[in-house]
Image 1 (spheres, rainbow, N blue to C red):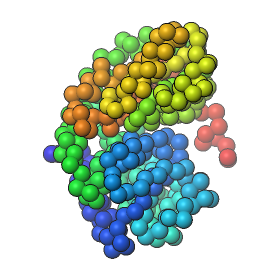
Image 2 (spheres, one colour):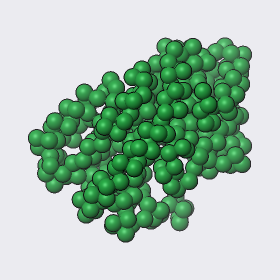
Image 3 (cartoon, rainbow, N blue to C red):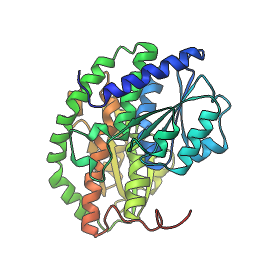
Image 4 (cartoon, rainbow, N blue to C red):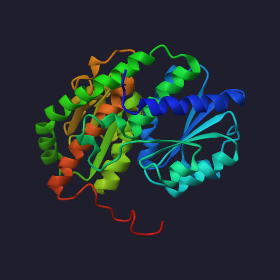
Length: 334
């Protein structure tokens, strides 16, 4: 199957496997990054944690990796660092991993970036401010590239039985996303008007869709709209956060398909009873169930993340607060 970007990933994984086999085999994979780049690796981490029987998987902030490097980092480790250009902390993390003898991969938006130059191997993903508007490339972003890499690692290291189903899913995904992107346009406009004046949001998700809650809270709402937002796991919602729920609190719930859907449905039932100012994004209604059920859940965030940006961007337009606005980022030393 001809999946965009897959041939480069196959070639890198083959080289990585040779390096790790020579060192006694792969024992631990570390996904290291900051902010949205760290979030983008979550679906890949979730996949590996669910399906791998031999690989230990961790996700770490780049600065923490540099200052509190796990002792297990070494020749039997694969460190995958993501930065569109060259976030200083992430480049330092690559240097730290290289010095420890780990095999390193840099996921980056530019082939000549310092991220690409510092890592032993690199993969370039599609990056543009309006990436979510191109269905043919939406799975070629940092998240999609990390997910493809994870599927290939599973196949190369363990002979993962669902690999061909996953590749078929990537082939079908652009059509699913294109249909959803067009279908929700009227809803995005209504959402923008309904939530334009809210200054506090809660965002709920579970499973592979947790990436959406994380990214929406820290990137789309707090970074790009300068409004407070709390990311909350749909299961953890009932262990404290639900006490803040009323008909004035803006809550977004991302209903995934797959094993964790009942967790999201429980949260939805509570919101329907005690909320009133909430919005449900349902991956099933948006067409994701057309993928093979053995792999479909790993694509939740790949669909819901760009759809949510469509909604929040529409809200930004109504608020006259562009998604490109920053108060501190790129303006001051910090």
